[in-house]
Image (cartoon, rainbow, N blue to C red; front, side):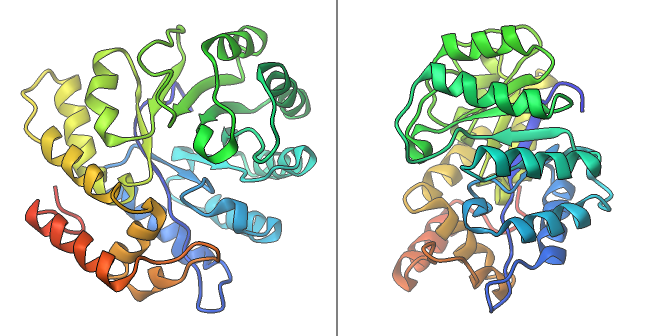
Length: 291
């Protein structure tokens, strides 16, 4: 993969009624949202409930994903706190010719920049062929990347540390590194991010806003008047009234009931909140697959 840029969805995972991972449907979903306008997809991230999926199922998914017609468009998340399991899963992925990863620092424990650099150093020393997009989301892991930390990591590993998904939003306006991708984690930051030099976005709601996001992106690149950004931001803000994963699964279940299956402790929206979400999106004239 060349420099990572454009519209990326943090893809959803699909489950059977017994809560086993439906590998075929998960791959089909990823391919579908690329067809709808995304440049690529981040698999097994937080939106994909990766922390809750077994390593065995992740490996099975990687094997099937390697057969996808869009194989070169995937970022692989690990969703693992364990350093050794992260490395082992990455090694499996590289044997399938996946070398592009989205990796968040471990959750739960308190640490700082020094420990983060140590964590990624050990990962890269073990898997030197990897290209890593850092995942900056303090809300989930308890740590927020500093600019100095990222600059030090890029200086130490310029070939391996290639970008950052910024969902804490403390970086995207200020971090400037040559040939390095900064990708905010919200559609509401897409246009502003592009204006200050960001490469695109990686977001949960691009599971449903891929086409709309792509139009905003293309119009910026082609220096055309923006006609879709207001609607895109309004759709994102509507989903943000609720838990994003719950909202996406509830919304997508309108099309296919398989999206009703989520792994505890994740849950669907209440019927009342689902109704509110759908009504609010209808007011925006936004439906599945709309632009």
